[in-house]
Every structure is written in structure tokens, then in C-alpha cells.
Length: 102
Image (cartoon, rainbow, N blue to C red; front, side, top):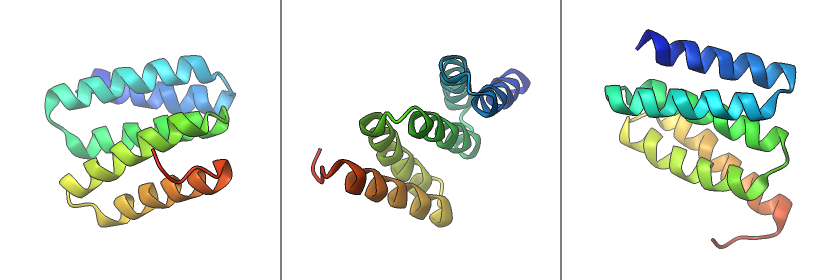
């Protein structure tokens, strides 16, 4: 679990530094590790970081897809605040791209 937390911290650091490819790789590592450990709360945080990375890269379709997945995950872990934020991200990306269907 400590390794997963370290991957998430590294992803956030790389994101802040603008090293998006490295940030994405670390976010994916963290998501996989938290999923394997069954820690959905931390998995949802790592997923939120992945969404932020895609938005910074202006990869809106990818951000939308991950945000939709995140909303479902937040619902599963009974985190309505984060679920609402993820749904809002989905809506924002849809508005930016003028694409409202998958």
C-alpha cells in the first residue's frame, strides 16, 4: 500500500511540474495498486489525479471517459461529493467539445 501511495504522490508531483507522461504512468500504477489492494477510496483519488492530467494535456475525450468511470467508482464507495465533482467534469468536457453522447 505504501508503494501505491508513493506512486500517487509522484503522479501529483509530476503533474505540478508539467511532466504529464510521467504523471500519467505513476497515476496508472497507483490506480492498479489501489484496485489490487481493494482500497476504492484511494483508487478514486488516483483516478481524480488521472483526470487532472488529461485535462492539463487538453485530452478531453480521455478525461471524459475517465471522469465517467470515476463517477461510477465514487458512487460505489458512497462518496457523493466526489461523484458530483466527477459528473461535473464529464459535463464540462462535453460542453467544451460539444459532444454530448459517447
